[in-house]
Image 1 (cartoon, rainbow, N blue to C red):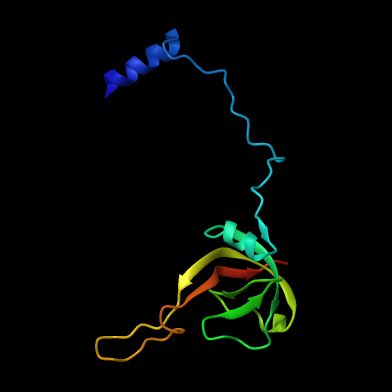
Image 2: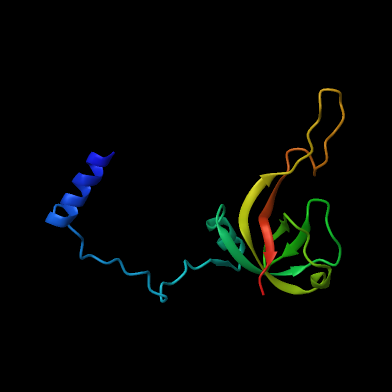
Length: 134
């Protein structure tokens, strides 16, 4: 161990170790965050499936089985995750989350019983991680 300390000391003293003059600057504060697309129509929804999006929607007065149902101009979807706050029921809000099509149909078990869900084979438009944007 003492041998390595001696070698290191000798190199530092004699200039074996070069120091770098390159200084990395921190990222600038002006870097733009990646813009989140806003969906306003069914066509926008289709082109943004699988992506995090924002949508300004009307919230129903009652909660649905799968999640809160919200409606845009010509599309509607279930907000999955946490229920929307009670105070937004019956209002228009902007939500953000990942737009997906999910099979939500009920499934029949081998014993003949049915799981929770909508009609068998049903696919629904959903927003995963749906949250209100303020």
